[in-house]
Image 1: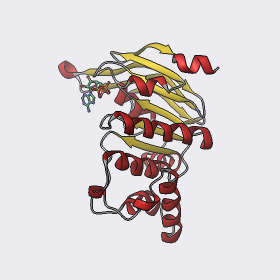
Image 2: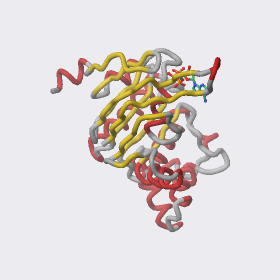
Image 3: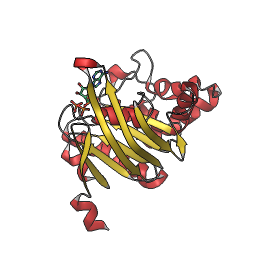
Length: 232
Ligand SMILES: Nc1ncnc2c1ncn2[C@@H]1O[C@H](COP(=O)(O)OP(=O)(O)OP(=O)(O)O)[C@@H](O)[C@H]1O
């Protein structure tokens, strides 16, 4: 579903030039869970941002369901992203003055979905992450794990084909990490959502179908975690 072809991303120029991505090629199937690992500064976030159209690219192609993401207009890219992608970050990026359900329905309202329908879909998404009873709480009244579950509900409210997650468990303790990863697994199994997850956490990688290791802007290794190998 995602095909990355000879992707380069260069920041700056002259003496401050950084080749953050140096000719990355990668194919991700629908329903796959990919973990991207590697040392700090190796280009993981840049790859995620270029694959999802958050960042521009220097050269190469990112094909999503056959469409060249970086070829069309920025407006077309934004529309595609809003319809097909969900995002989860380490910092949950919830709006503090809005309740959980208001945070979740916001992307739908921005797309012009009817107010009643947006609320219903937000409540369904919150139910799916086990937080229906916290729908009217503000972020300050929720725990870190609950924040991330609201953020996940917001990411899936649009029934995305793919969720891009950047260090989704970076701020969570071990038990909460397990819970969030269980939710990822559930959504992957039930809705066949593809996950591309940047992580430093070996537990996250252990649950992936494939782990991509990067170094200095290149993919240096690809592995199937032991647990997955046993299941196959
Ligand atoms: N906007 C930018 N302008 C200039 N250089 C940048 C920019 N964004 C990233 N870089 C550089 O590109 C390289 C890759 O950065 P990136 O954030 O993708 O790494 P990372 O592997 O995600 O790191 P970490 O694990 O620390 O989050 C780094 O050398 C970084 O300094």
